[in-house]
Length: 337
Image (cartoon, rainbow, N blue to C red; front, side, top):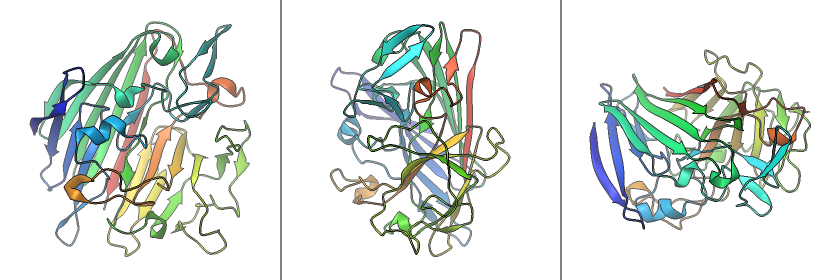
């Protein structure tokens, strides 16, 4: 483990990069800005190592980062319609950062905050953040703790807790873009979800409030298949919330991704009820990637475990409410092999 300066924010605050490693040769790079996973490299069974996330070369790129590469998003991931947060008879107006929608925590969000290093060891780092009452319109002061841990032989564990001093809502998500064969389109990868339902989005990308069966549609990944498959329009843009069939059961595989050549696979385990799948259609070569690699449309995909999107405005969805005395918890593992 080592800690290095990664640059300075406009207000003069220093951003640090924490480099982790494990006995099997996996390495990770974590930034205190946005709690971003900047780099993740895993060993291959036949020898060698492979980079499996997209990251930026410079801090300047993370200051823009309108595609949320690698960061921890919150206080509420995904979309909240009109930024309206009804809570205990009051409607709190959240900041809007995607047209008329509150996306991934709003104009500031946790992805643009500087996190504190609480503890660091060879293969793990714990970061913390205080989100004050009123930040991005949210009520209550929220204390968040996030631990990234390299697992043997090749895995990344994400453990998150949060507490609040007053009623609020919390839904956090890790927003890394994964690729198991760098340089290949993610649409050539094979994918499976433990999910038979999805949350349909309207034309404004806000949930309609219904749940739909995935059977026979573009989001039917109940059996492992290529993302770009026969019968699905080649320009179909994947960006939807899958509802897991076994929410809370982190012992089960919630999603599985496989490289097109079969050289590497990734299993996702999570305690969360949903995973948002985004195919990286908006990625572009506007900022150099780690090692100088150029990003491109579909260079990586997001598998974002979280609570239901827009649940404050959808009475049929489970609530993401957090009250004083309660603890928000999320455990997610990305395991490679």
